[in-house]
Amino acid sequence: MKFSLECKVESRIGLANKIEIEHGDRKYIFCPDNSGILTRIKIVSEVKKPEKFYSEIEYRPNEKVKHHMVVSRDKELYESMIRDFQELESILAFDGNLKRIMWDEPKDEVICENEEEREKARVFSTHFRKEYPDPIKKVNEHVLRNLIATKEKYASLAIPKAFCREGNNDFKSFRYINAFFNFYFILEGLYGNRKTKNYAVEREFKKSKEFNEFVEWMIDHLRKAPRHLKKINEMLKYRNKNLDVDGIIHLVVATRGDLHHFADDPNKTRGTPFNHKEFESIAWVALGLATRAILQKMIEINLTS
Image 1 (tube, one colour):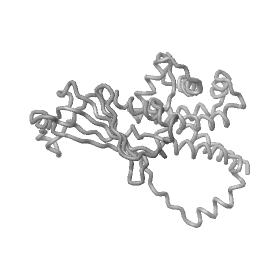
Image 2 (spheres, one colour):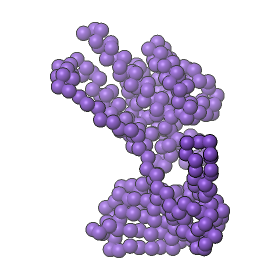
Image 3 (cartoon, helix red, strand yellow):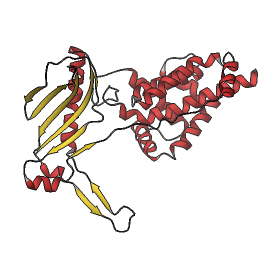
Image 4 (cartoon, one colour):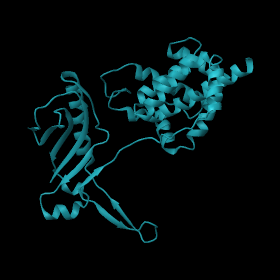
């Protein structure tokens, strides 16, 4: 049995033809499009444990959907192949003109070599694509006229709103580290009282009654979002903090400190272009806090105008 992963590529790398390179127990296949630009990379690996690719069909008579397919993959092999794509991405970006390899949404294929493997594998290929809901928000003439009429009134919030736009775009593109920074800049700018050191910013956040209220509101939302709650509790536990206002404020500021630096130490919390997913939940928290912060400043402007 063999197992392959294929990823789309954004590049300006020219290839005269398809190139196949064998290295160890893997084959690397570089595929150009009709114009000779590298657009796909495929890695094919030998499978040492075929049983980890055997899928099952479960029959559940009491449920609306009677049959459920349980698709199995060798997680260790899969993750090692993703690391291969990440290494290729770094190498080809540095030595060539590669924009990115879409290693976070690969197409996989199980290549069976005998009838027993075909019978037990059952599912030979999968491809999942992630995306956030992005609904159309309708705007009428009345809304546009009001926005134009009041734009000078809210001019002081143009930059925080710009960071919010960037943060939302990054979040929906799964660039959670970038998203976190953009949302953090809003919080630091509006409630950091011009402080920049972590301890000083944390102190300013804790002094603000408004900011404390935002955090309490965010904690309520966290309790309704089990996946994010689990991750945030793990991050708090790592720092010996509790799920309370002081704990969340400390976590937000400390995460900024961790992500602002890179230490080549696997035992330390660090952000890299390969582990954005680790920071999805804290970026989600920062998104909520930043949105509340901008809305609060809009309320204050309305009250004083």
